[in-house]
Every structure is written in C-alpha cells, then in structure tokens.
Length: 78
Image (tube, rainbow, N blue to C red; front, side):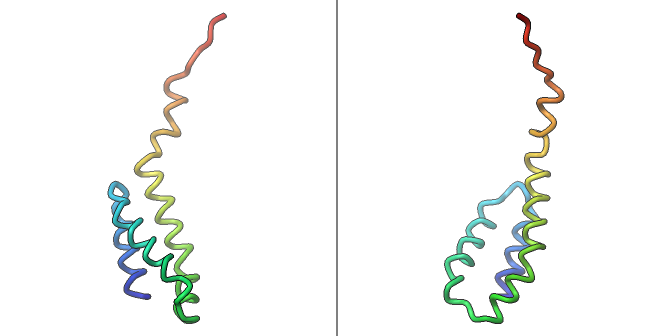
C-alpha cells in the first residue's frame, strides 16, 4: 500500500495530467474491501495529504475560473 500511495502522490504532482492519478485512485478504491487493517490505517493517515494535493491541483488547473466573473463584469441594462 505504501508504494501505491507514493505512486498516487507522485502522479498528483502534475495538475494538468489527472487521468493517470484517477486510474491509480480507482485501483486503490477497488481494492479497499480487500485491504488489511494496517493498510487501511495507512490510507486513513495519508488521505488528508492526498486531499490537499487534489485541492492544489484544482486551484492550479482551474483556479482562473473563479476569477473570470470578476474580470468580465457583466451588466444588465433594462
């Protein structure tokens, strides 16, 4: 499990190529019911770090979308 989580973390270092990270995450989720207690505990410890990496990737790749409405300033004239 350590190796798979390390690989997922490595894949999450590229915010513009999420497909491979998604594939690895899906594999981990498929194996979830089969994991031993130690692996589950390790996964639980790593989840906050993985979440922060995913949030960072979202901000890097799509953060400009949050600023777009402020820059465009749509006006309605009646």
